[in-house]
Image (cartoon, rainbow, N blue to C red):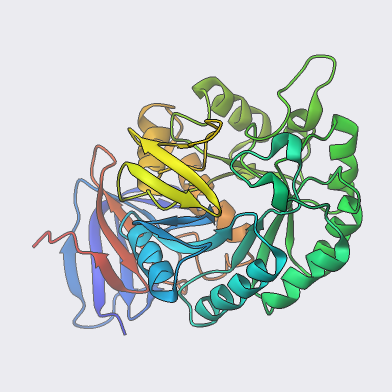
Length: 381
């Protein structure tokens, strides 16, 4: 159980806006409405208090892979991202053999059941060879609903999202299957037309996997999937704000067209996040990380990122000049809602888990609390 604390004096970002000289009361593992007796008062003046970050698309970190690592490796990767403010994380796989992916689903579902993960995201193998990115082409396959169902079943109810190229044979039926089972159907690694994307949204797709990346560019005669995904109120768009995956103008376009309520920041992180440059494996493919940018050794395609969400938060506020409230929505509230967990996480409200991040005046991370316990202790005295 966490202790009883009152974090006082910060600029607190609430769903209703920013409260200056605000306070957040922590009682055990939850946020409380009133301070309990004998609560410790922690002076956090000059800081920002925001909800813990929620990452719905993450392949690993700290040198560990969620796709191929042991249980200990996965736990190490989770902890690495917690040190950077991500208190809730969905583990993403990459394209692999179906039996191997089913085996990984079993391992990751166990960690979900014990509360270390928020679920599983299958990115591949049901994606387009034309837009495969850092996925092994020989392992790609059409989204046969029976095979999609095999992965869902292997995840034992812990599958949160499946990324599909919905224009492929079986794509629309697979979207309907996922929707019926309460699993997010995400459109990504796709070569779909505008019209095909609209059809997939009408069938039940609700997320755009890393919008702009691994899909046809926006065209004035053939607008492709980007226009369809941005214009439809039913779609939440993932964005990777690392300065590599997106030009700042593309990020601004997404925010202005979709609005802050329909954007979720992700890392799409691979093993090197929070670890360093070098050679890594992403599934069966070798990746070279140089100056923090991950690319396939063969072909040079961008291969995920080395991003952590604290860096995404700071960049969004200081470089992209987005309002702090919009960044909090994109990095906490919106992904929590997508996961159906917004009754517990995603905002600093009484009754919710005491998951929070403390940032200084320059938006550098100073403290992380998860369920009432400091993961990163700010040691403010």
